[in-house]
Image (tube, rainbow, N blue to C red; front, side):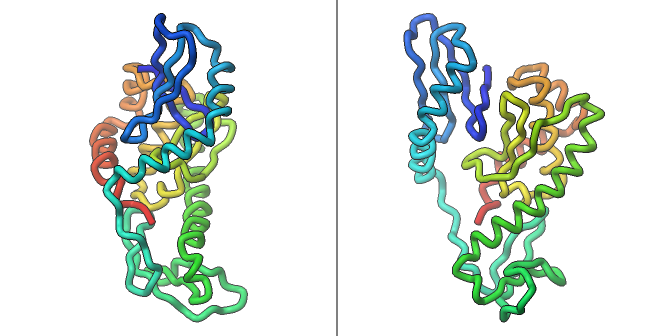
Length: 232
């Protein structure tokens, strides 16, 4: 299987001599299929994907209805929120001038009452900021080992995906990654960094991942089975 990534979208490439046009399919589980005639230039594929980007995202949103829904957070005192694999209880507090709307303080999250209605946005901003710092450290430790360096590292909403590697060398990570344990973050960082060298999920890719992380299969399996629980 060949995988191509354009920005935050990753596709399984399926070339066929019978095809005369490029087609995009969004599977029920959110997998993206790019069906093409043989030997289409990557620039042409990227152009088609960009033209269809809005349609693709709308279809991915529709597919979410097929996934088991997780209870929506209400951002009230006593709710639990994950950070680095541990659940911390939330407490609503009176606003104090000069303090951020959300902070992790004395082993609990504190959200100012005035920010409750924007609780999800506050948590996403908080996760993005913390994850960016954590990834900087993780990836810096891998640059020399892999002799590869990303053009940029960005944290954003990737829909179903934990991370992706653009063909120009940009790495993308979902803000939800901040909820996972450091061992899972390490696995995801290694996974995307190896894509800088091996773009496709072939034997060479997984062999290189295993060289760095011998227990990657266990971590990969855990993420597939438990990752759905880490969301807002």
